Image (cartoon, rainbow, N blue to C red; front, side, top):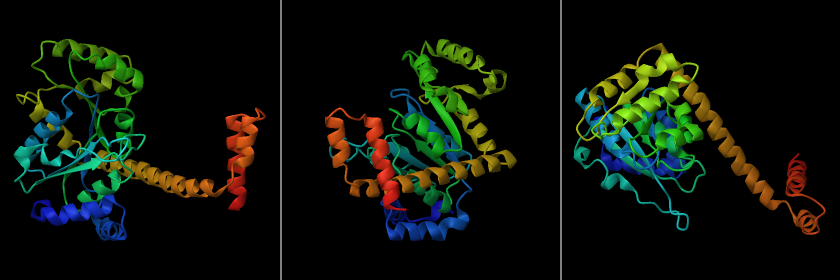
Length: 305
């Protein structure tokens, strides 16, 4: 069981996986028969809505009903050093001695979507080690909120009253990726109004009548609505629909990894193709960036045919 693992050994193993070392790949290969059982829950939303507090409250409730939980918290990398404020030592301190909870912070490492390329592999390793629920908490900036669907089978989009998040989130497509919509800070005077605005926005969708019961008003501070939300999420992790979602997730994850590997190899090949003629053509005004790029692409493909 997950709770029986040595935390330091697991942390070292995850470091190997995150750094994509041969040891990490060998570990994933050994764990492969056990991967695919956990509920992978994405928690995302704009900054300041209380995602970490909500995750903390959900972990507490999931433990109360007997589930083991791992949290993968993606922290923003510095654009200069690539380092990050890794929050596993300051985040969710109340669970530090609980053998059924493991928290891992990952640096986003400057990825355009905000998620490190190794995020899915780290989640695989935790899945293979027997954790029943794996929570992926995003940094809440840029495209990170949208990219969470590539690594989570169930996505919670978190909003809060008084921040104007609803309309902006709708414009960015954030509302469309959710399986559940959570208005946090239910004790705030504006919470009911935000809940109403959110409900109206979602009812404009074609399937609006089917999603009303997936809108939740909660308070991570005083626990309001957390128990019902946790139990609902866990109930959805069991059965044929859950199995289908996990198959779909593995398909998305495979495509993500394929594209990443292909881009890495192709990028190396592009670097070796001379671009002097294209640069001169651009400087002389004889071509556009688009045509110059197509020319380089043709050269790259021909050099490897």
